Image 1 (cartoon, one colour):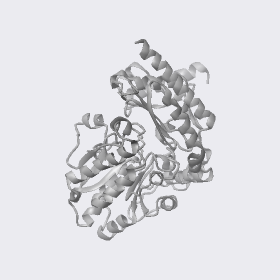
Image 2 (cartoon, rainbow, N blue to C red):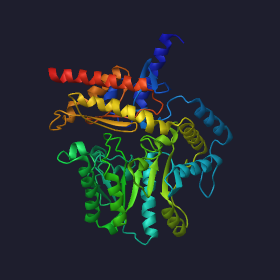
Image 3 (cartoon, rainbow, N blue to C red):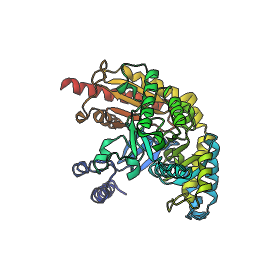
Image 4 (cartoon, rainbow, N blue to C red):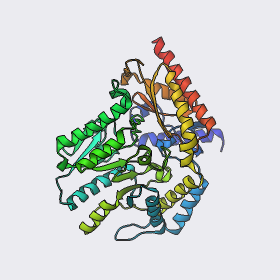
Amino acid sequence: MGGESDNAILEQLQDLDRRHHLHPFTDAQALTQATPFLIDHGQGAYVTGQGVRLLDAMAGLGCVNVGYGRAEIAQAAAEAIQALSYYHSFFAVSNPYTAALAGKIAALAPDHLNKVFFANSGSEANETLMKLALLYWRAKGKANKRIFITRDYSYHGSTIAVTRLNGNQAMLDDFGLGLDDGVKRAMAPYWYRCGKDMSADEFGLFAAKDIETKILEAGADNVAAVIAEPVQGTMGGIVPPKTYWPEVERICREHGVLLIADEVVTGFGRTGNWFAQETFGFNADMMALAKGLSSGYAPISAAVISDEIASTIEQNTKILQHGFTTSAHPVTSAIALKNIDILEQEHLVENIRDNLGPLFGKSMVGLEDHPLVGEVRVNGLIAGVELTRNKETREQFPLEANVCNHVSQMALLRGLIVRPAGNVLVLCPPFIIKPAEIEFMTNILRDSLDETYRVLSAA
């Protein structure tokens, strides 16, 4: 095709998208002023759209861990779809790919987590775990245990049930949801914003204590579970102090409350271990997996539960009244298996722990000398770069100033994708990123921060 024809096709597609595609988490009015940006190719750590090549320091939405364009995953998908394009998993039916994947997840997971329910998204996995927690307590004769403890700045998905768990108030307010009697929200382990007068270790214990306070306020006999992300990625790359997670687990055990780890972002290696529970030294009763399970190549998620919970449910429930049409889909299971195979064969998780993670961390933390940067939080290949108006007082910029958005736009113009989250830049690069690309990423961020600082100083 000629260039003029390509441009005409692009404009036609953009027009169709703008008129008919309702985008998630998008300012609909902005699309009336500017055309949607069409990404049409990905390879390695880069995506290309409209002739522009960009280093994707977000790995999509923190999910394309093995990088874009893996031919072996495409081949696995093609072989599976030719062999068995679809069959359901209801009524004790399975398929070879799903059976193998369930076994693989159980083999990699902490020893006590051996039963897997498959779904299609992190939202579905978390909602499945909520329902299984309620089912478990009813089977134990404790039907009053129905309250879930969540945290500020949390993100667990977009269904009605899990939206109520979120610490993003706009997601509740816009739909008139609000918190209900079944959800209590505790403090996040956000030392930079909430623990200025304490050491990080002191604040970790202090933040954990707030979970205990919420349990006691509700009454432990009424609380089903605490649900939390090991690292709060979506709302700011919040890495907890090392004292936090062991204390949260101790509190849950003491009060007879289940602990649910939302490992949708951290699962399958992002923190330098297969699961962040290993990194932070705790054991959950349940965990949600999604993004890294298939590296985003296909929609699939998993709700993983302990042997004790599985046994209690199976012995006391005649039929599990829960499922999705595409639970345990053979093609997505085949894709996930191949993705895990790549992680293992290329030693990508170990490389984060031993090489890339420390390099990425040193590079990112080096930005803390910038006048706009208050703190850089890093664990493995996830980072939150906290912007501040005043480094001494830790004052935030007003959100309406869009300072973080300005930095991310300056980075985009220079060839780098990062995610603005309030006053934080979040980065979750692919596991196959190269040292030279980490250096490029850091240099672009510094240039973008410099440009933003000049604009603010001139105002």
